[in-house]
Amino acid sequence: MEHPLPHRVSRLRGATLPDGAVVDIDIGRHGGHAVVTAVRPSSPLGEHADQVIDLRGFVVLTAPAEPHAHLDKALSWDVLNPPFGDLDAAIESWRGGSAALTEESFHQRATAAALALLRNGTTAIRTHADILADPDPLRGIRAIDRVRRELAGLLDIEIVALTPPSADAALLHAALDAGADLVGGAPHIAPDPSAELARLLAVAETRGVGADLHVDEFLDGAHHTIARFAERVQAWPSTLTRTAGHCCRLGTMDHAELAELLPTVTRSGLGIVSLPITNLYLQGWDRPVATPRGLTALAALLAAAVPVAAGADNVRDPFNPVGRSDALETASLLITAGHLPPAQAVHLVTDGARDVLGLPMAGVRVGARAELLAVRGTGLLDIVANAPADRIVIRDGAIVSISRTDYRTAYSAELEVL
Image 1 (tube, rainbow, N blue to C red):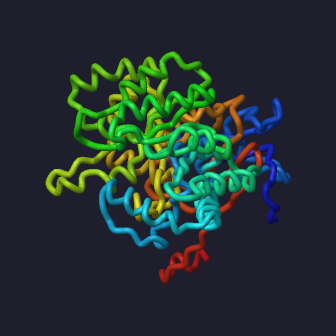
Image 2: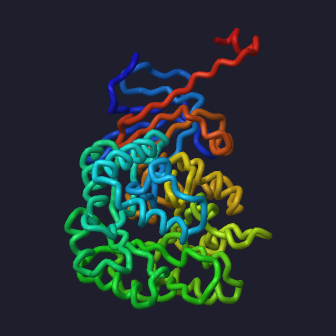
Image 3: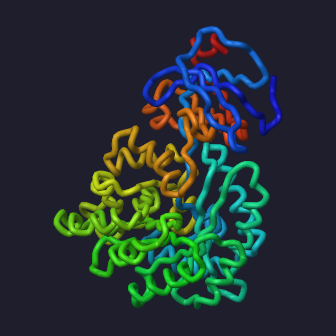
């Protein structure tokens, strides 16, 4: 029987956990939210009821959270037809091409990108949205705020005002008034990175909001800002977000320099967001031999107990021509390019991402929010390797998305099964 969505569930039966255990999961309500109330070994016999879902053959994870998206830029590659190239080329292409994009274009592409994330299992998104350098600079933020309201029953969206050095403080305040939740920017591209960092954080402090900055998205140079960012926010209240995205320069520091910096980052409470697909694409174009990976210092940050998350970043726009809006794609890249073990890679796009975003604990543990992703497969590595499209997405205890695939191959054994 097909159920209308969202379809609330009370029990998930026969689910495989990342550690291989097969369990039944009970879901109830507490404090106005759906939470996991019991996790126990699966019974071979179970009732067939409207709110009981059979997940035999599915691996169940904490629903991914996307810690760093650009919904305003998403899916603009075919519209803008940009050149392939590095970060500077992408910035110039976007600055020139975005002027022709209407607010409706921002809304349509952001909606499509958000729904793609949802179908793949993501139930919370933090997206950066540019303050544009043209006569209507806030139309991207307005469009995403509209998407947030339209999809409020399906996923959570948080907006960061991505502020160029050319935008004055009054415009940043206007962006916050228009729907942005956090101060954003990229101090390392400003003529005076330290002054730009101080300017952005001063606005955040004045407004009593957090900051999520693009930090040190380059491989060489002494103009990195992460130390000053970490020092500035150490005194912030623990409730205020402080996040640093990219941090590519950390990945090229020598051991001594990195070891000296890490205690400051740890004390600051900064969350670090690695963005493998975009930084693998953008970084290293000037090094055709022994091209660096362009990722942050994942192993060192994790060893220092710094909160680390990973995200998809750009999806089919001037900053990255590919991408599937899929946390399992990000996890796979963390394994391949970041040399993380599979469980740790998946952690960075699920529980680790939720931690950096300041979201409540979720997943298959008693008392946690019932935000879950079920993927057809035999185990954790199997679903990361194959990224099956067969998925069930559960948000707040209700199924909000179901995806299925159908394969037919001209091979007699398979045809007999069909």
